[in-house]
Length: 310
Image 1 (tube, rainbow, N blue to C red):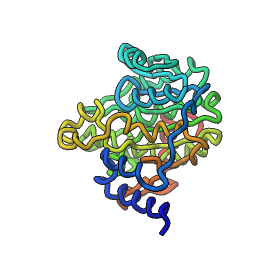
Image 2 (tube, rainbow, N blue to C red):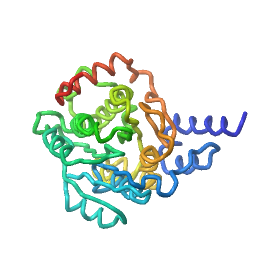
Image 3 (cartoon, one colour):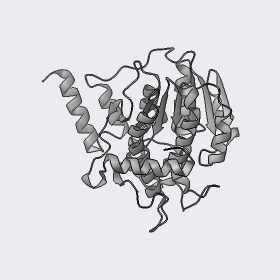
Image 4 (tube, rainbow, N blue to C red):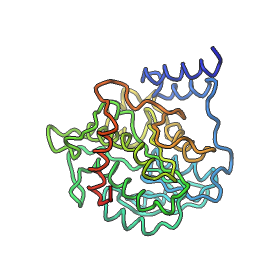
């Protein structure tokens, strides 16, 4: 067995165990394995523009700062511009703050009209609602924030993103959920914010292969950060945060693969789901599996919801 093969075997074992791969020590272990993909070199994004949604804290702020260190002009897309400006002031580089509520399709259309350049687009904005709420267009908020808004934004920015990259920041929580074909808006049963979050992240990952086909000139990827210590986790999942806090990744560790996907050369294969710089199987348990036809049905529903031609 070669060192490369052994490294991949150990890496897969960490991933399938969950507890071995998702905390900060999982990333630390992988970095020491043979075949760990190299960092993007200094200046890798010089002359390019990177857009990061949800960039006022946590993973989004860390991603934006990393892109700036690699030479990109960075656009922080946030709902609260005061928070965004504080993050911008902490980043050394060419940084612009823009307001957009990604869950509001009308606001997404307005924002897209202001973008003249984009080489990397990271869909990082996220919510974990305590109760079911809806957007101005009547869509469940987690679905709109994680799927519908990003889908519409990328479609509208397609002309300026040609040759660029799009990264959906998903979640390991999606492994627990089936594709909710029969109730994408979560209108039935007892609503749970954590389930709504994971369901919408499952939809993201299911759509990525289809979006890679729809946008052939753009590299499309989804990634999950492992267990990261973010304001969203601390506020929305206090029990989980309290139990796992000593083992959680910091924001830079959680953003590592997002940054790598946006900057590494050559561009990674399009249409895949990533964790710790490796493409991963999007299913860990058999009861969440679905086929290509189900993904297509889900895409058609989402496309209709945001007014796209199928």
